[in-house]
Amino acid sequence: MNNRPTWQERPTLFGLTLKGFTLTVIVLVMIYPIYVVILTSLSTASAVTAAGGLVTLPTDLSLDAYRELFGGGVVTRAVLVSTGVTLVGTTVSLGLTILAAYGLSRTNSLFHRPLLFLFLLTFLFTPGMIPTYLMVRELGLIDSYWSLILPSAISAFNLVVMRAFFMNIPGEVIDSARIDGAGDFRILGRIVLPMSKGVTAVIGLFYAVGYWNAFFNAVLYINDNSKWPLQLILRQYVQQGMDLVPNTRTYDSAAGALPPNLAIKMAIIVVALIPVLIIYPFVQKHFTKGVIIGAVKG
Amino acid sequence: MPFLARLRRDWQLLVMTLPALGLVLVFHYVPTLGNVIAFQDYTPYDGISSSPWVGLYNFQWLLSDPEFWQAIRNTVTITTFQLIFYFPIPIALAILLDSVLSRKLRLFIQGIVYMPHFFSWVLVVSLFQQILGGAGLLAQTLRQHGHEPWDIMTNPDAFIVLVTAESVWKDAGWGTIIFLAALSAINQNLYEAAAVDGASRWRRMWHITLPGLRPVILLLLILRLGDALNVGFEQFFLQRDAVGSHAAEVLDTFVYWRTLMTGAWSYGAAAGLFKGVVGLILIVIANKVAHRFGEQGIYKRS
Image (tube, helix red, strand yellow):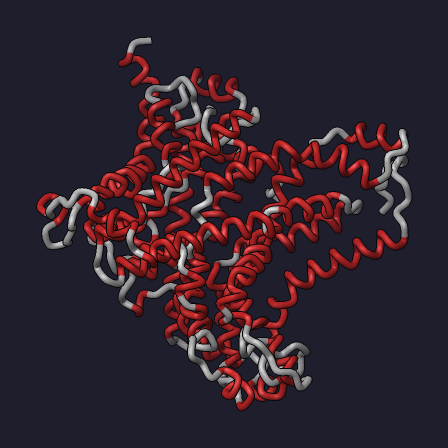
């Protein structure tokens, strides 16, 4: 592990200890809440009662909470809604973003400048909540799952990232394909996309996470609570149902017995967390400066 | 090259761009024009075409509304507070991470601190509630040791600290990315030369690392200025019930509660338009400042 350049002085024991300690604290602050929540969700009701709330040390483990959740109730439904919206939404968003990013990647093409300008201008001004809401209602999308997808389907930021990446592909590659008579759809599918797996994965993750986490658009556009995505369930049962009521008598009730379904609440949190935890490691390796920074600088 | 020849050459590119363009037109540009209802007494029944025009009435109403000013005050206070107590953290964290010599260890820590950026606000608030709330882990531990717990999550006075802590937990790690990239771009020979000349670690940080980060820090500060009225929305929406509107009402939540809850469409649109226009002005100023400092800013490119 000796990566220290020769000119650099040896670290002092004190400095090294301080650094190690700081980093350990940072990592623990990030991980510990998640550990406690996962552990509690996997504990039996009696273990939760014995701990007086959240479980910090594994004692009595069971999958009861998850069996309950996926027994076909409201959470099962919400998970299906969120999964569906995420899959369809990511497909639509990623597909249209790739197409448009490639369509705008040739600087001398027809209408290139005005079209690009229309996308870039969206950075400067957001239409605002009310007119957007009225537009969605005008289109009859209230209580439709499409209201969770279409208004936010195109992120100009993601489009610009993708376009910047496509523009870095050597022009000779594309020009020679054109000379061979390949159309642009063919070039995109056969040449450009296979060279852009990393950026596609990252942008896909951004979109997918956005859809999975989307909360407020459902508050606005979905009145029918049988169509609620998971984040709204999380808000309703976990966040609001517990101790965020303003005039609460939290202390009394908490000192007596916490709601017996604490494990279930924690399981809902875990279910909202899991997809991110699973996909994240696969995409993380692409978070190198190339993909993101090129983007930030435009 | 004649127009038709270019069209024949590029029509596929145009077809590719159209679907995304359509969505942007329908859900960005048309609603932007829909802001005209801020100058009307709009009712959904009459629609934009036959709702009466009322000039600047909604804006006069807005500027004399104490709750609106409270929302502005909260927004500006939170932005300023976070500029001081949030903004430096990713920089410090990036310098710390950059000093970790083992590549494997560094990537591991990076992986962990980036992760919460991908959690939803509902999730983050729920996690904080489980740890710091009245029935949370901290209160539970204190109670078991015979102390009187306090509920941080419902205390309006501590709210600004709470939301900043949540933001730090969620996004400070992710915020290091751009600084780490800037750090890796600093010429390592400078460090070596300085070390050979006898400069200590701290002097090297002061005279090489920080100047190396200066352009990025400036750029992000300027961008933050242009974004001053956006403190985030869901975070405040979610916690408004717990601490009350006096502490948690920001401009975006104001629009929601005053409009979608009461049906005062034109009034809400006026508030939103006010925010949009001030935001636009701030962005333009921020870019002027950026260009003055010789930075790129967010436009003037491509």
